[in-house]
Image (tube, rainbow, N blue to C red; front, side, top):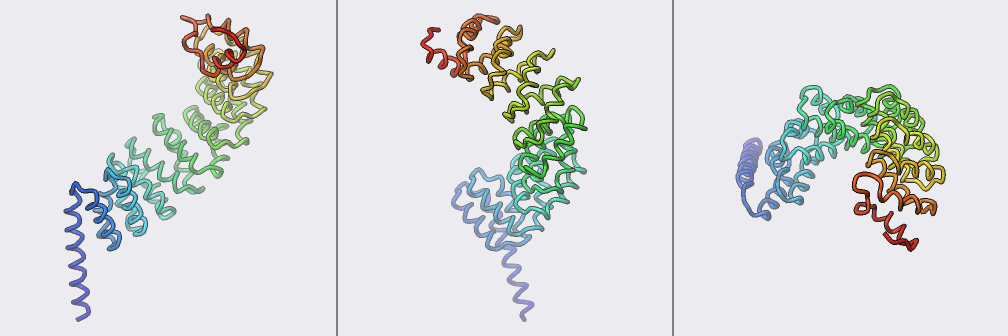
Length: 325
């Protein structure tokens, strides 16, 4: 008798889930919120498909409640969530759910990386792994970091930023032993993490034969504001590649260091307007009185001068010195 009652109860639950699923198209968000709450109360594998559908709801509160319900169900949701990571309507929220499920999702996500090379799919898997974090996800993310598609690489770098300190040494190893594609992503990730252990390797990379590597190194050093980087960045102001010179000038703008002033003033005469512009920005924020005269002269350098495009803080600096533009 008890078995029959249990069977009848299960039938009732299944019918209820089907009825709730049919109501998901209701235009009233209050109705859909009540549905997601009821599905959360019922829980279980049968509720996974409608809950995943609710991940694409236009209202954040409903999406978040669906994520919470899926996380509470746990491991049975991992496979279905991974299968929708290529669905533009739900992939980011599905990745968030996998990130909150955590460690049990790592191996299935790694397998997913090996089984599908679609750009958006790989990017979303990388995001999920980054949210989970830990040393186990570093190796598979390194493969994504080496992707020649910069958007894919960028998502891998963001994943390493989410991981933080455990990723620092592996990323430094990439700076020293990886290819140019991987270097750029690793350099940006290390800049965002902000660990000074990366500085020596980034300085060394300013001498690399690849201009993309030199550019990425100079940009990353600009984010460190480390005293060891000043002289190497000054030297980079004379790099043969104008992109490297430009980013070196911008990087030096992040510090108020007297060693850089003379060289930034020299950079005001660079034939590349972008270099001249970034040197102007750097000097404008330096607060150095020696920069005033040279900044005024710089207003006429480059195509059309830069009267109309002087950075606000450069303009303020000159105005504060009671100089008329």
